Length: 381
Image 1 (cartoon, helix red, strand yellow):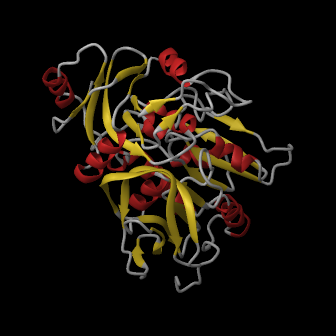
Image 2 (cartoon, rainbow, N blue to C red):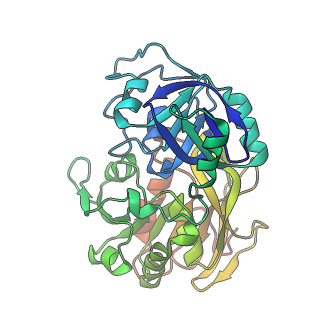
Image 3 (cartoon, rainbow, N blue to C red):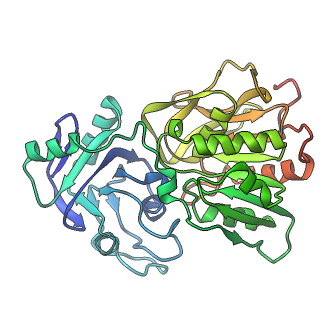
């Protein structure tokens, strides 16, 4: 049984582990990439509803894990594949969920469930294959923690610093990355461009990040409410003051936004999946991008640059479905960020060049000297 916090219930069959779980019910619109979704730390404490009706076709493998474990609190599918058929497949999805202790449910009308969440908003839910009394399960749902106000990045971050070396061995840049829930393919994407990436725990300070003597600092994706991440905002503020080039994605975009003086807010149902259209306001180019966020930056989208403690800042990208801010660019200091995932794990490769842009910023925006992201004139147009 699956029960939402507004009382709506869906019956189904146990899929994965038998047990009981609670979290925020959200939906992902990706047709593929379910393994990357399951292992994305940004989904920590969330119950993910897959809009694709058939899930598990290609099985699972060790290479496509984006973290050390499955991160979702629960999993909802319409119809699990009865077989796993792919040359890279090592195990089947149901068995993988069961081995990880992840409680799921199948046989649910995921179209009806998704429409409900789209109209009413993301909300808490519970899945149980032990207690199928809707009223009893609802009481437990209402007693479970909400996502608003949740500080989750430290729970999924690395405990100890580690280094990802450049592909091929030749180092062009040294990057200090704050792990707020980083996906494995992100430092690998930078390493492929000659970056030596020093990954640090979520609560590391600006001094910790700058101690690596980096050419640039990266703030990663991650779960939870950015309004609680004062430690990360303080670190971003310190990096901005030092004039070291800064690039953030997803949660890192929200952290940069807060460091610049903007607020954040919770979206009704968020953006999740690998088919979200985003417009680059500087070039007019449209990219299909991978998203996983339930919060956004509250910045002006009228095309004007806002004055902040670190100079002028402009919104650089917008979501075409709902005009949510999808990127911000500092015009007077070397920093920019986007709300989506350029590492393409899983997802399209349209935004892959953002890592090249970061490398360009590190090459031209020397610490302590003003720089601006490529594609933006000094007047912010």
